[in-house]
Amino acid sequence: MAILKKKEYGKGDGSPVETAEFIDLTQMNFEGENQVGAKTLIKVAEIYRYDDLGKLTAHVFNGHILVLDYTAISGDQLAMKRITNDLKLVARDVGGDVAGLGKNYFIVTPSGIKVDRNKIKGGF
Image (cartoon, rainbow, N blue to C red; front, side, top):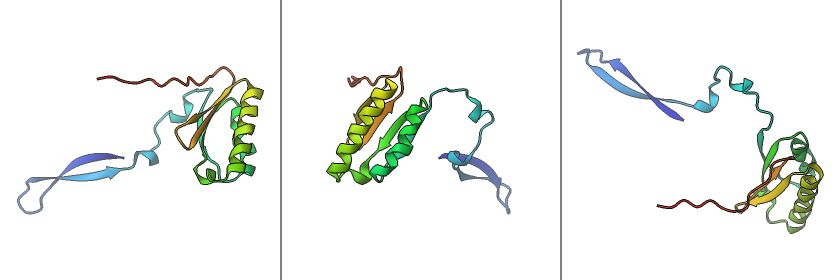
């Protein structure tokens, strides 16, 4: 979200009055936005049940990176074990990689993209 300030002039004395108008940038379309030409996209998805996994991993087979939020089913140990095993198989099948991100995310990559598991730490 961004703020755009514009000047309006008062009705009585003609002096400028600044007003703030909010513009939601997610609703705006920019010229040439969808014509970037990227071959690999990062797809962000949520999984609510194990049965959704096949539809979601199809993106990895198509060469895209999948960031999977499993918060909704994190309490179901059996489903988590099945999902983890299946994601490992998908990564092996495509020659990619799978890793956990934080507490509730997996990242699955296609062929040629590996996840560096070392954190980069900034200093001051």
